[in-house]
Image 1 (cartoon, rainbow, N blue to C red):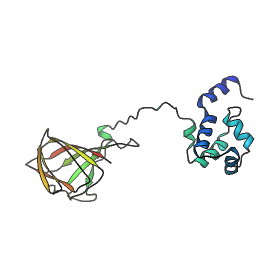
Image 2: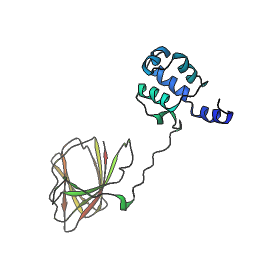
Image 3: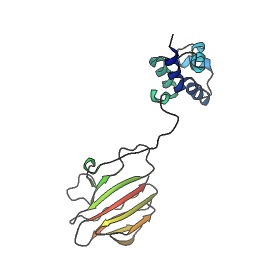
Image 4: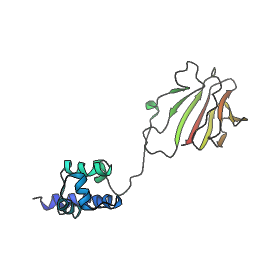
Length: 194
């Protein structure tokens, strides 16, 4: 028998109601869920009503039926804001295209630890001897802000020259490419909507 303290702590997670919500969402009865899990309908009913707490192996059997992880039953209902910090020294500088000795540009992801991103942000560097990038297309929209140097952005064959401080938003589902201009290296902040 669980102490009142343990019972109250476990009630806080509302494991039973979460199981019931998943079951009803899948339109399963207790007998059907019992058939999928190998547990008795009576046991499942007690778990759903909070009269009994499942062991981790039992909870895992239930979770597998619904295609959720164990964390589903323990995470807070209150959504925590997504925060991902990338320190400058943690970023990887990658060439584009990959494996090229003389890439069109080098980029560093500014948001890689974040899951379920609604946008992707990059720091891009266009070296002095870099060739123009190959036309490519992706996602739905792109925003570029030139930090230093000069850059020409070609979107669907139309060239737009940008200098430090200039910004451009465009439909990235059409072919587009970049070309560094001038004497020095160019850098830019690029934000893509996937």
